[in-house]
Amino acid sequence: MTRFPLEPTYRTIIAIGRPTFLALGYKFTFRGRGNVPRTGGAVMAVNHTAYVDFLMAGVAARKQHRFVRFMAKKSIFENSKSGPIMRGCKHIPVDRHAGAESYRLAVQALRDGEIVGVYPEATMSRSFEIKELKKGAARMAQEAGVPILPTIVWGAHRIWTKDAPKNLGRSGIPIHVTIGEPIHVGPDDDITDKTEELRTVMKRLLDETIAAYPPLEGDDRRFLPARFGGAAPTYEEAYAKDFSDMRRKRDEFTR
Image (cartoon, rainbow, N blue to C red; front, side):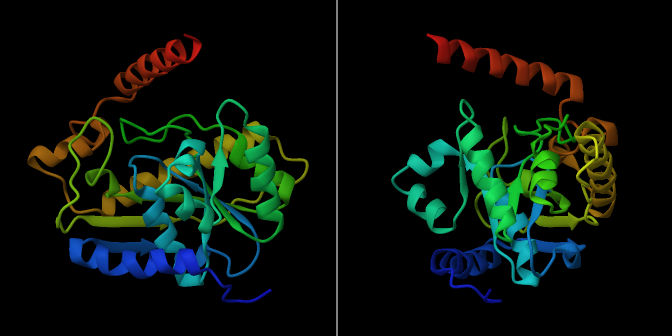
């Protein structure tokens, strides 16, 4: 296995992304990048607060010369512009109504020594807290025999998130990424227990990352969880909005 695999699409995106991030003034702070293994498979479990947080998590893995294959909605692959990029980067399409194939592809990628990026919360967190986690991350790690990398991205939600205007210009927004120590899932471990362990670790890492982040004041308090005195929706308010969205989408799907 080549240490620096040929990745023309991925490398092109990185070559474009680095000067773009520099031009936009993003200020990156990384913690725990050494927890990303230089070789071998791993499930990178990322909190989900922004449309662009997968980009920041991917940047964090580059110190170890790794490319992350993210699981993403099938519709992104079907788009004429984003589809070729997603396929070129070997990301994994997810059909939420038929998830068995995407799960199989992810496990195979892990067995082949890839890092697979997942959002264990499944949907974006409007409260910016860690939501209840799906069991897929722990199940994939167990089946493939690889560790889970609990990962927190903080600050990307100030660029583009739900229920807030986009901020895509030069903003100088700080982006903090924390990668925790690997969580190992043994063949006989209980998946429910391991999923709860992952959530506990991600909640702790989130608190530590927020504590190290520059204070948010004025209108920017909308991006701070209510638990920290911010103006973001509470966990319960966010859940109610999510439930409303889910019911609307279900009704649209069954029409």
